[in-house]
Length: 189
Image (cartoon, rainbow, N blue to C red):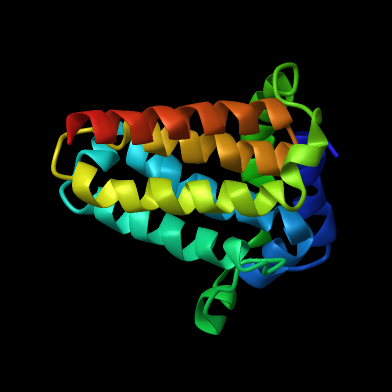
């Protein structure tokens, strides 16, 4: 399934509803729900205006660790508190958001698409999760330096996009950045 199809499915699955809950969106994403749950904090950490705010890197790193550790232990979907799953918003926002991002998602599909899909399945899925945990942990000491979390954040971003699109090339890029980030930390120590 292409990324644009995943985005469209979220809109289609909620048709007829006035409001959309996070629980509904997670159910629609099913096994791909780890991707967005890892992508959001990674993107926040990588954006200079947000990631440069003191404490944001620590928070985003902690979120990455909490989500990724669930994948390490083989949970099919990330657990979220019931109260958070009940969060809802007007479906019209979802439809408008889909219309805005769909052209970008469609353009990205010329580069991001299903290939080497076995890299997104177990046992590689758990290896990806371990790498994300390591990258999230790296956020803590790197938070002391401005934008030092960029490489680990991009690595997590590649992993998450790779999981959503089932794109093994992005997974390989995530592994390369993980090794690079770990190497830089070891070299600096």
